[in-house]
Amino acid sequence: MQLSRRSLLTLAAAAALGGPARADAVADLYQGRTIVTGRRPETTNPGLLRCLAQVLVRVSGDPRLAQHPGLAQFADAPKTAVKTFSYRDLYAFRPIKDEQGTRDRPYEMTVEYVPSEIDAILTKLGSKPWLGERPRLVVFLAVHHIGTTFMLNSMIDQGELMRESFQDAAWNAAMEVVIPAPETIARSGLTVDGTPGVKIAALLPFVDGKVGQVPLVGQLDWSKPLLAWKARWRLASGGTERSWGIEGVNFDAAFRNGVGGAAQILSGNGTPA
Image 1 (cartoon, rainbow, N blue to C red):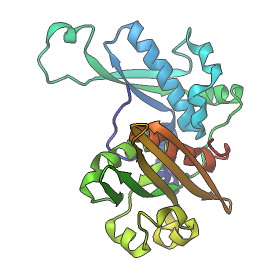
Image 2 (image 1 turned 90 degrees about the horizontal axis):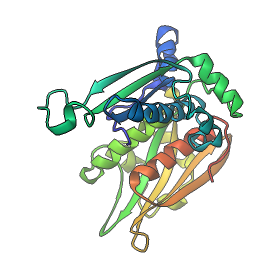
Image 3 (image 1 turned 60 degrees about the vertical axis):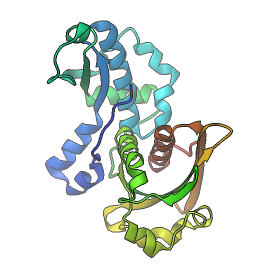
């Protein structure tokens, strides 16, 4: 089950501080979270495997590792590299009904991993940690839905669920996502129709480079034939614009594709398909 997270991971800000804050930010990379039903091995062990894949992605910046065939070797040893794990009862203040007090009660499981052991696994999978300061993504997103179009901003009512979904995607990629204010969108002159052709360089004056902000430009279109979303993303890195996308998905998956793809590029792991 996909875990909902409402707050941003402020990795880049903490990295800029150095000292203990930097150490805490790096430690956060080696932490995974998921939802499990009950605390018995048949639900905990799959949760540990999900967290391992999650942490490998967070530490490396490469979302492809979540589907790496090499993960299969850990199915029989789900506690590999685990330092500790704990549970938070999501029904802590609800009356117990039926089996919710035993087998079916949902918990948020938090897993902390041994960094050196995770780094060693990454090496075996042909990857490496991305421990430097991470840019902050400022998302300029044009949305075409049934009967409506809009630029996503920090205030627009129909964008509330999308903003929350972006924060989930940000946590999974260990990135920070900023949704611009309406005033920023207005000053940039960006419109829904103009988004596909805008040069990323034209948006640089409207992000704060001093704190590592970079523009992520996206188009999100509802497809009637697919009854699902199509997304296209663009990011500039090393003086080159990169583009990628996904279709036939809900917007949660579309945003994971956008943020995860940006992390893949910025971490030096190539361009998403």
